[in-house]
Length: 305
Image (cartoon, rainbow, N blue to C red; front, side, top):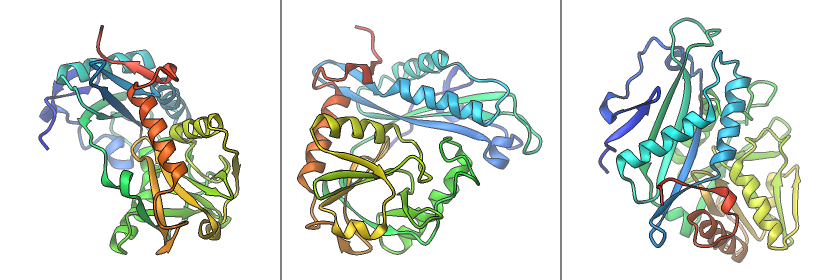
């Protein structure tokens, strides 16, 4: 896949190859940066690209900047305007994935908190085969970092070293994904995504006090499950429960709703993608792509009509 024509750096639309930051920045040295991943869905019939849950992502990005004590909080309206301008400059008319990063663009030590830089990239993004076929997950030997050690509600780049180690271990061991347990031995989440299971007809997901990222897709899925009439529970989850579950799936902006067909080579349910997961996938995609008028408040149009 070829690179996009343009990216956005500090408010300016620049050629992709010119998107550079100096190696002396504390963002490079210590990971002092925060980010959001954002999906855009192309609707051929409407000739429109819809950004999904944009407002929620901007609220969390603002929270992340404040929590990390950045001297300057980059305004959400400015970021949204730049995202749209970048997509239009690249003339994307396909599904895309956007990364918005606010970073400390100055030299120094770990306590440096300014000035703030802004980088935005948008690239085409296709649906992965795991979305249809499901994935095999491993319970990682790496423990999920506790909120008392790192602020996991914050989308801080440095936090994701914990996820990277679990993902690398899973790949080496022949799995496609990983589940991490928290310091209490309870299921927290996947290496960069939240997790659900369907057990006895109830949709269960670890609570927000289980050392998880308070996922926007997680919240969306809870709303959709409740609308479908399915009972939901947010609570502590044991790893052994998945062996008794009928279905399980990961969810996240990047992962959307990805079925889990086995954990530690033990099938989840029948070992096939279950009906609740399939129905949820279809409903989620229909809303995100704008094939239904439902939940229009979750979609933001990019192109002027």
